[in-house]
Image (cartoon, rainbow, N blue to C red; front, side):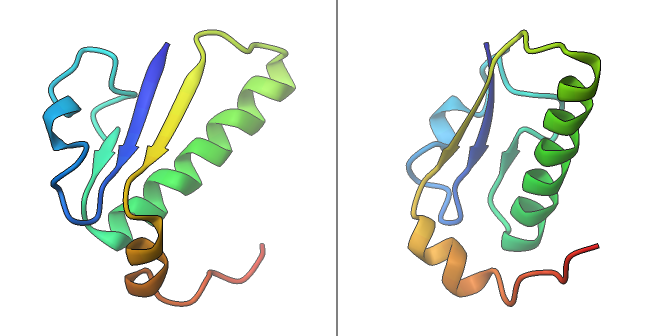
Length: 80
């Protein structure tokens, strides 16, 4: 299992940031722009795995303070 952690305030999930299960080096984010980039990378990874029919290891995404992320994250990007 791999983890992707998003914590805009850095209080709740920060203790888990040092775990070896963090997805890539970018698996823990505090800044809203970096969190959006992480979510986009996760979507790309999921699409890549679906195309290759690979589903392991599992990716778990945890978002602490989702309301704060939505308030500070700005407007959603237009669809490509």
